Length: 160
Image 1 (cartoon, rainbow, N blue to C red):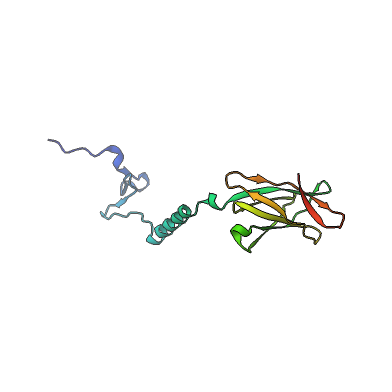
Image 2 (tube, rainbow, N blue to C red):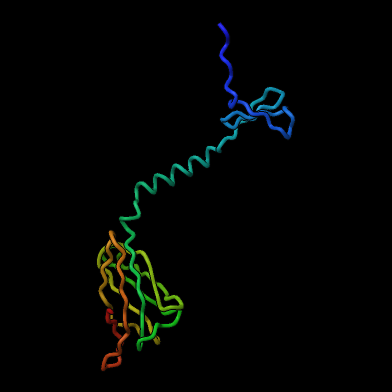
């Protein structure tokens, strides 16, 4: 009985080192001395990866990430960059407030807890009357607003 032949692909000789180093498909480096060097991932790195994976599994993004986005206009023109927006979701965030700013196109976008929130805009150093918005975890929700000045001078939001 003949001994089994080693497959041709199991050992590849590095042509640059003229046969002094060989690599197997498992990425082992075998110098001529007979020692084996195996690339190892540090135990701390594996622990970090494991913890991160556990966090993602425990808190899926869909449970707290409902996207709300849109544009804000005043006198049929987009508001300038940096207009402050305040969002409150008392059922999910308690007394915590979330602040956003519009981009150069008067647009905004953020992820909120699913459910009812209030939306306010500070334009010309005046906060608008709060407007109820509803974030849906299954689909992004678009809220395009027009800032309208009431007879008393108070700003309010009208959905477009």
